[in-house]
Length: 316
Image (cartoon, rainbow, N blue to C red):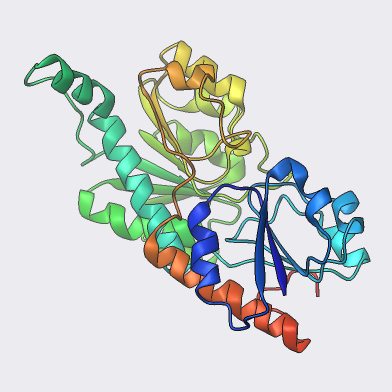
């Protein structure tokens, strides 16, 4: 099998997968995200890394499987893949992947509340006892979207003695009880939920319905001094609305692991805000998460080699 990683980001993924390939004839190839079309010769398996895979690219090769390294497949034109008989599969965000993202979200929340950038500046300035931080205990944390990552987060946030609320399509769904929420709101009633939220954590998938859903109105519904944490997808948030909320001081800060275009430009104005803590899309990039993903991807490559349908296939 010839396996093409589309994009030279997330370098640990290649090493993890290479250690699990079962055939000595398998070959891993890497190309920059803007050079995919010229690298498709002989490629059987395509692994997109934050790259858009459209019908033009599909027609440029003879791809058998488009395998997402993780859960999000919004960058793949699924209708075009179905028309061409190309299998598309992902690795659901469960297990260590969800746990890893949840741990990063906790890191971002604590870093925002304790003003980590100012604390580091105090160290550099030889200053003790500054900044004055804020406790997480007794604050209201809202999980926007109730999936595997939100469940992992709920489990970890409870010991901090927070008030936990959620926003989801159907608050009456049986699964909601498993989150142990103090309150749950429908998307239609989100303003009422946001009005009582101190920390808004985005856990929803990116889709046509959620693209830009955290807009000026949503951010304005938050109390002044609230925080936003996004480790889901950048485009769930309206960039200009976020910039405006930070510039005006309505938001006390934002923790971002995902962006509108990745990687985010080092000179992006958002990064100049001292109350923005940014990480380079590393929510799920941990040893255990990558071990599980590599196992799943290698198993799917073997299934395709045998002529079987891969696990978690969305186009079969």
